[in-house]
Image (cartoon, one colour):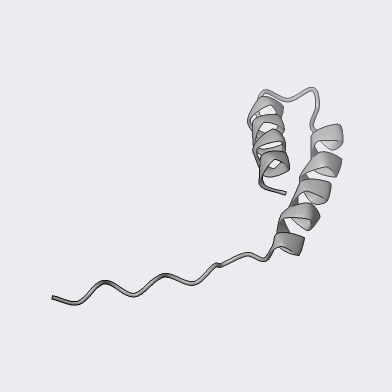
Length: 50
């Protein structure tokens, strides 16, 4: 029985910091909209990654 192959990473470590910066800027632009809370949570989750 063979083991499944390991999947490759889709994003690099640098990608996470770029996404966090972009999302942080976007949060400022939509701060008065209901979906800003979801983006704020995503921003904090990305911060835990790197």
